[in-house]
Image (cartoon, rainbow, N blue to C red):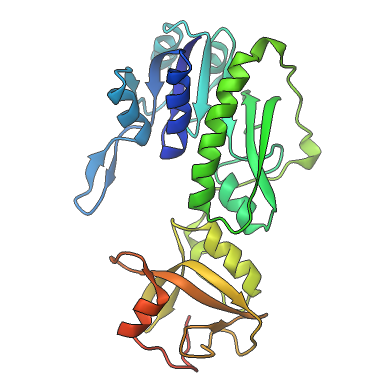
Length: 301
């Protein structure tokens, strides 16, 4: 097929690669414009832009698709279909209507559950046991279109980063299979009554509240790892927790219960296993404690 690909982060790259390796003609890759990154705040191209340029695919990075000029340029590509994976811009109706077969989206949840910007993080933080990929025919609503294919995977103890990588590969293969079987697939409408929303992660959600249940805090840790990272304050320093363990211990919430940084929660206790200090690489908590011993009874906030 003649395909326009639309995606931005690393999650989208396996789908772009799979489309190319399946023999499809990717006539253009739409992505978000380069953003400032790193300490020098230099403009950095998206993961999709880097992959597309390496493959000799034309890259387009408009700041909006709502103006008639951008829509005309898109329509002039005469695509059979557009494949979208974590693109980051709303597609107005003229864009949705331009490809002969419409626009298909690689969405990282089992729709209609977790429509929105952060489905992987929300599934982990909510304690879901499984998630997956849904290939959806796009329409004007937010992730409301009819479904063409679904693949499931267990969440287990995976972090958002680990699950994102896994779902990216699942989504890539599922999209290729969907395109191969497209004429035989019957779109299945979503049940709006079962829909849940997955809003973008707010920075305020990253701070750990030790009065909560330790199991919920551990899910918060996994759901926000590696970015933005659940965090607490110790002696005025912000420390991210990237991996943690729930222990059947009790105490006043926020107080350490031993010299291994086990912190009492509203119910049970949490022991960080992997942490990251501001401006430093991630480290095992044992290494952190060798340089900064934390005695029992220390208050963390």
